[in-house]
Amino acid sequence: MKPIFIFIFLAGWIVAAGAPVRAANEGPLTLGQLLARVAEGNPDAAVAQARMAKARAKIGEADAAFLPRLVLGGAYSGSSNGATVFAYRGQQSSIPDGMDFNHPPESDNLNARLTAVMPLYAGGRSTAEREAARAGARAAENGREAVMQALEFEAARSFFTLQKARAFTAAADAAAGAYASHLELAGKRYAEGAALKTDVLDLEVRVAEARADAAQAESSVRLALAAMKALLGMEQEAPLEVANINNTDLADPTDRSDRTDGKYRADIRAAQEQVSAARAGVQAAEAGRRPRVNAFATVEENAGVAHRGDAAAWTAGIAVEWDIFDGHLTRSRIAAAKADLRSAQEEERRARLEASLEREQARLGLEDAERRLAVTGKTVGAAAESAALTRARFAEGAALVSRLMDAESALTTARVRRAQAEADRQIVLAAMKKAEGKRQTAAERNVDARR
Image (tube, rainbow, N blue to C red; front, side, top):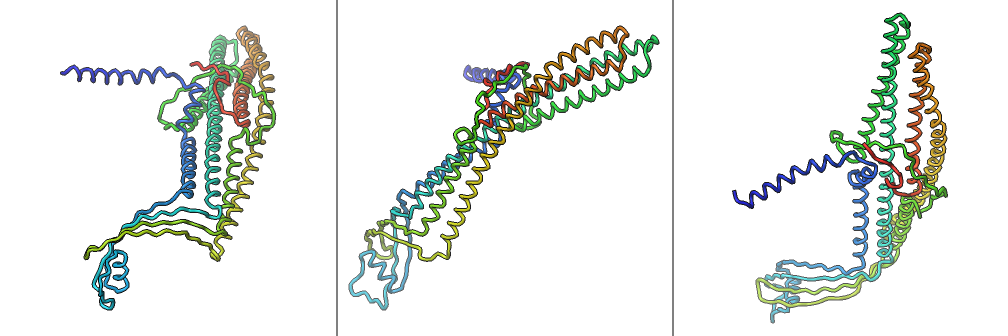
């Protein structure tokens, strides 16, 4: 085997062998990676990008109205009609002397022409359509930004919802393990005659309930992962591993001012640009009431194929058109454009109202989550201490099974509520950023990703 083929084979083998190693070293998906991937894989992001590209192309379409139009054309025809034959020969500068116009000879004509048309005045339609196209492009750009803000919020919410489901699973597993340990101890005591059969049965019921809760919590984890795959544009069969996080606080948006204007919210800016586009649409429709002026010029060559004769000619001039009556077409277009304008204005008002509602919901949700955090922080500690003391007393035979089950249940409930409050606070902080028109970033979250 030649050295070059050996080199190519080894290089290909190294690349193929290295690819799965890099994939394996990527590790679990962190929040920052999730925010980056949602912009790459979600179909809504691709749709918004395509809409923006289409809107930018519309600008070029509108700009074309200010440029000359060049048309290259040609035709070949033949005739024995006297008037047509005379026209052919006249265009070719080849009218024969003594031609009998009552019995003209058959003749043909090959025509090649180049025509230029330059719009001079369109009643303001071209200017209005160009402004509408530019406003539409700005609206599409802001619309894409709004889509990205919404997707990043959904990504953050799915990330912390998954963490919450994992915390529920851990609490349920811990409860199931504790009840199983207590059941084992109660079984030994029952065998020794130091415990009642009802104690063993009650603990068996609690173990079964705890295991059912753990299975339900695990299903919630799988559902959260499935929703995250859909958000990332992944097939459900594809593997996805997401990192766990510690319970560090998120960056709290300190600016609590009302940010419901277009300066901060991309969706409001998009709605404002749609209003501008609709207003320009009204102006374009009203241009139908004004005259249109075009300059034109044509250069052509006419030649006979059946007989010899050819000549070049040119034509130039200015054309004016004014629709005196168009069957109420312009009036209908103006009415439709004004309706579009009113609709766009109401869409802008709705965007402002929704932005104000989102901010108020985020503010109230943050207050609620912080109050629950303050309460559950103390509750978990007290429940853990109470459960520890009750376990010790039960081990010594000084506590009833019912008291032990109450203590374990209170500890599980406290842990679940604490995990829910922590995740809800993180989600509502992400909602606060979205309400303020800010992009989600992992750095601002102060999230510590770990396996």
